[in-house]
Length: 112
Ligand code: 5GP
Ligand code: ZN
Image (cartoon, rainbow, N blue to C red; front, top):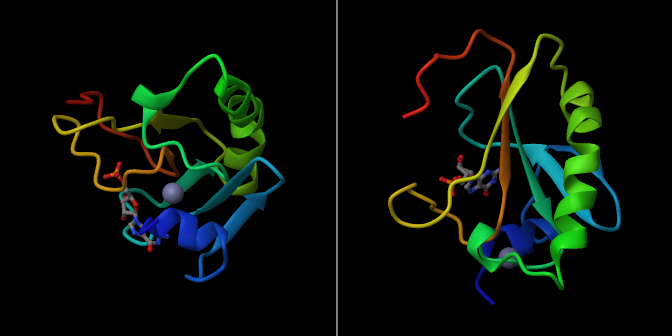
């Protein structure tokens, strides 16, 4: 499968890792939109939030359990925003489910 995030998980493309376990990988975004911009991805290929099912939702739960620790490991101290772009209107560019953790500055009040 030609998936850039699966290649990062496999170590075929280098990444600046923040956290890793059997279920997920967190690494710094190559084009940061904030002083702290980390992507958290499942190691299983799930294309987007639209592909979350009863069979794979345990993976999502495990990711959410770790988000606070990942944000802390990334250096965030005063709060963060968690975003997952899903589909065309949200401008999802990588078709492997990912959660953006944005922080390290006062973020704009408007999200869209
Ligand atoms: P999306 O627009 O799909 O929500 O977010 C995809 C994100 O992946 C973008 O913020 C983009 O900068 C990031 N990205 C794309 N390719 C790479 C890469 O090879 N390495 C890293 N670290 N981030 C990437
Ligand atoms: Zn993938």
